[in-house]
Image (cartoon, rainbow over all chains, first blue to last red; front, side, top):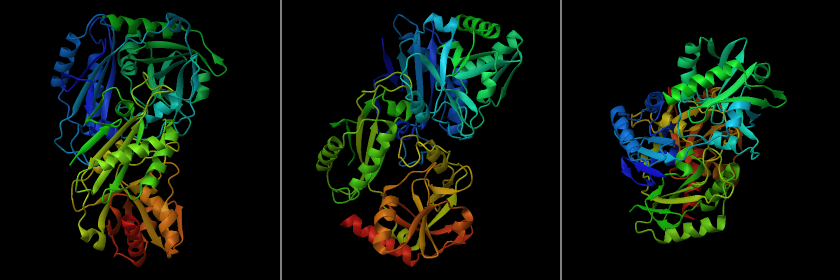
Length: 276
Length: 276
């Protein structure tokens, strides 16, 4: 079931001197595998490439595509699941300074599917507000880098399985995202999602909804600053990522919602894209 | 010359599923090895233990001390150098949520000494101001965790070897630290160093100077907010860490300094502690 490649070779181990471990010096993608293929692969590789560019890590897209394709061909049945792709600056260089011509490390892992109860998609999930805030770092905002301690701290704030996700605020109290999801609300017939210019991860599903799903449905959508009061007053709320898709939010604190028409329409369109 | 142990076994490789790689979910120490021993070992383990506690990673100090002792006994001549100790949350757990009872991973690496030109200790080093700012994250401030992308970005801002170190500011413009050092200034006969309550690494050498060296010398010392203008007006400036010790600063922008009497006294006392 599990399968790991390091630099194109079947291997479960990584050089202990890798900068991915030493400094979190790399980027990653967690991608949904459906019937042996990755429906949103182009968007994932776009984001990975952008993140590598921000960190000045060498990125050979053709080589990564070929390796990913070869990896997918080696996957046993069942061919649904999750593919994790990590790209680090490699092992070269002492201290924080990276070598200019170091060879990046590529790690591919096949993970089991994340199966959610269908009731979550119909009736929605309960959320909480995390105490751990997202620090401000405009250079790293949006990219999916390997420095994820804030998310680890936030996710470990609760162990009650009835809470599906936690929302994270920035230091000024604006709501930015879920620990492993992005957030959308419906307000006055418009879709709104937090702007990610100083923190947060620009999720591939968020991009899909902003750039393809909402325009296709004809729903106005924009990025904005969102505070808790705005969310409490929203007509609909949902969270999303590329592994779980779109999950309506049913409860946050004392506020409750039913799944609305726009959330339903976005869910349906996203599902169509997934099986296209 | 090089030697790596993973969980007490000679091994150069780490499980590719380790959370240290996936999320930077761990802490580390970089310790100077002098004649086969680590002079500041207790202070290093104090900080490692504090960091593990902040991240809720299990920490068995006795076991780590025993393993470190066994590792040092296996080191070949020359027995000077650097020992890097990493402690991660281990491989258990899917997603950001860690398992409560996962077994931490311990990685010990022996690295070559970092030998500086003696002229640096006498005449001082030139510094620059980095463009990369340190984000604010009070929960993680002070500890030496594995999320070090800000330092990687800052260190890669310059390749001119005549610049020894870069100073990093917080988002408000206060000076916090060097990329891999802490900063002290002498102002009005007092030692001042930036307060690290919202970002920065509380270096072991910084602790040694604050808690032992300055009191032993009878020099008043305090933690405060420092801005660039205060540094420009300082009588003496130096940087420090546990590998290089104390290095006077000779130049920052258009301001120049000669090594002063307090820097010299701190250097001498630190050297005595190193060889004690």
